[in-house]
View 1 (tube, helix red, strand yellow):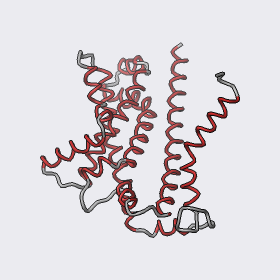
View 2 (tube, rainbow, N blue to C red; view 1 turned 180 degrees about the horizontal axis):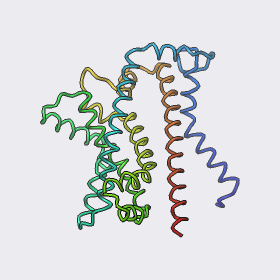
View 3 (cartoon, rainbow, N blue to C red; view 1 turned 90 degrees about the vertical axis):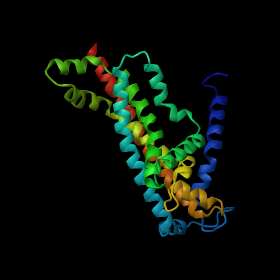
View 4 (cartoon, rainbow, N blue to C red; view 1 turned 45 degrees about the vertical axis):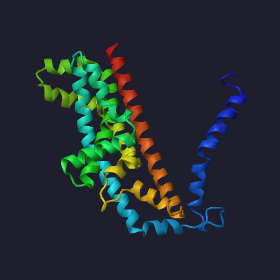
Length: 268
């Protein structure tokens, strides 16, 4: 089949239609006047009003935002320093250390959640925001570490060496030269980690306390009693937020590519 054939375009369009049709249905029925999600009876914003008047749902949203922001900030520091350290060592075990650093991404979430639950129980930590923060940081670090490591691999090491020759110390050369160059990668990795933190259900269920609820757990527990149009409204708002995060993420990636192109031209 030719790449530019009409059948290829039709097949691609049909594939995207089937992929995004359920999402479109959820968005449309979030504005439905009827409570039953079977047919559209009229346009209404009542489910958005009820969603914003649902204090339990808003509290869960605030908990998820606080958890996502804090875990991303901590993961950004750990992941960035870890990527810089891995790029500067030349040990024989470097490859093994790199595999270990991304191990939380390869372990199934249910196993990672059980391991974290047993670990926190052995330490005697009360289950709640602290355990959630540690658990989310564990699986957020690899996303940032991989992004920063890829950015460091394409960076010219002579830039930092020139700063050192001009009298800058290790910290000053990292702060003034390396960090600004890898900042788009840190930002893009942090946004991806934030999205994964907001989406996590499995790990959070294992390490969550009885008095705290995050947004994914709240939605999951409500789905057991039946889907209401409030959930459709919530999904629509989360979809809009996700698209915004993706736009910022793509802008950061374009900025990184532009920076690499400029430095490659200067090098020539």
